[in-house]
Length: 96
Length: 276
Image 1 (cartoon, helix red, strand yellow):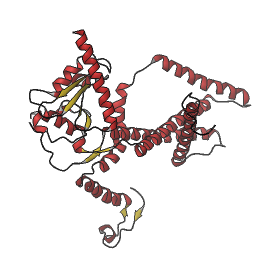
Image 2 (cartoon, chains in turn orange, green; image 1 turned 90 degrees about the vertical axis):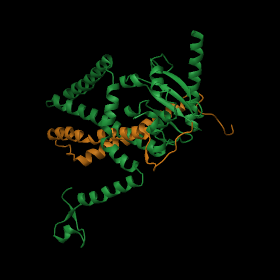
Image 3 (cartoon, one colour; image 1 turned 60 degrees about the horizontal axis):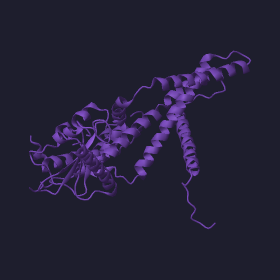
């Protein structure tokens, strides 16, 4: 019994893992775009507090993105600190 | 159509997660305008061509071009970015479980988060402090936190896609349906992969309830298939199970997985013999 031969032109498609990643990315970007909700809450509050500036959607989105990057820094610091504090995670290779 | 008719030739080193039934495969403008130039019919008639029309005229032929040369992923990626959130929800929501104790803790924490600042603001402020200001403030805080975490997740996903050494694009000859066709095509007609997977799913296995591993060496071909039933909590998988197959030389990562699976299969075989 011999295996059948491949015929035709192959297509280049996303792997299962790639599909899952892009689906998750799509979902997270959708949530990020919901920054419009933050704008509504902010502007409702700004009606009663004259010192607060009103937000446009672009500004709300920029604010949320900026906050995301700040979270990224904080989480990187937390994971870095955990790794530094794990006994045996780092080995000395230089001179004493 | 008999499953054996589906079989193109195998590619060495191939590995995929397969569903045993080929026919039931699970894993399966606005406003602004531009001057289009002298030859454009819109310009000739004095009507501006919108950016949307121009984009459509570029994107659509580019998409067809990508499909024509077999680069399907160039079309797949933008489509996934637009509709993938729905697929993600459809896949993950059925897996969500409700933990009343955790919800109670969350509600308690939210009440404390709102009540504490409200009491403080009411005492500190000389005039009246309205409850809706507290509610709006806390809502804003929670909303910003949630959307920022989503942004963080998006950054993480992009970093993984860009930096991972796992491929996100593969030839269709290495894809899951292709492997399935080969798995079914290379098996003698008397040996049905689906039947093997279903039989495996009925037994207790190392990955949890109803999960087990079987190993199939196809006679006269030299190909070896590992049948792995992995139903998780999904009824459709519990009914049909999954098939992993490998032939030739798997990659280092796949080889590690294969070793692990075969070790588990051997362990299970020994325990079954002991039970007998």
